[in-house]
View (cartoon, rainbow, N blue to C red):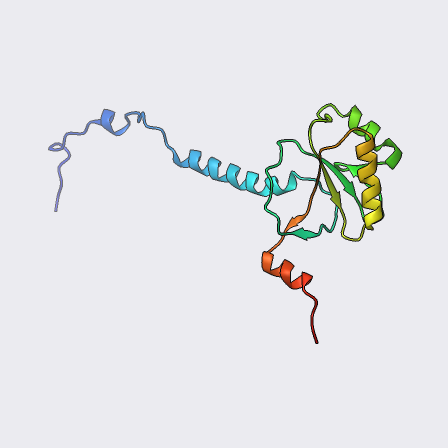
Length: 155
């Protein structure tokens, strides 16, 4: 069993020739990592105040690119985005923000434990300040669960 190297035609130029094709495997890996990062970061881009929102079965509306959130915490503190403000300074703080105008809607979030009168007080402050486009924020609920909560349990 012998082999002769003289009979074979060795062409070293073909073995080490440059390949002009793009290797897409690293590109796909980078795209998948970016996709995962954006999927994790998207829910975090909303307001990060811990508020227990009530549920609603209404169909969700499309929100603008940069919504303005006014939140009422369980301790009745008011915040714009994540910044706490006094109620007397609420309209002044909204007016001072560059991306907020009185024509754009303000999204009002209130904790489930906030009394109705306190919610109405904040709504009245916003209305008196010229902000008439106010949208209430709630969690999306399942229609069957809402009907079960609305119907009183009979013994």
